[in-house]
Image 1 (tube, rainbow, N blue to C red):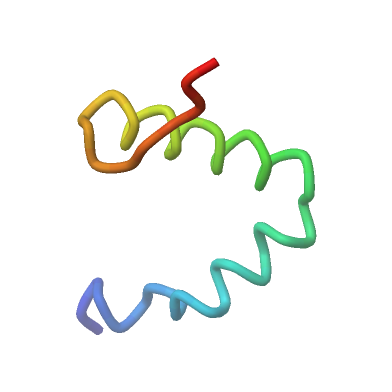
Image 2: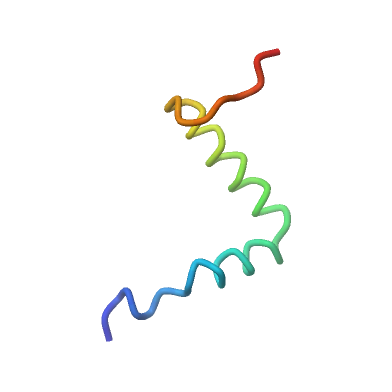
Amino acid sequence: MKAVEQLPTPEALMERMRKRDGDFALLAGIAGAYLHERGLIGGCNE
């Protein structure tokens, strides 16, 4: 079996993360900070 075939779907991954609220918030924060640092998304200008 190929490695790609063993991976869960993006929907299944999101569902697993939503069940673990604290982990999801942490991951979202890290991803947001990374994208903001790279200039790919805007942030709060306070």
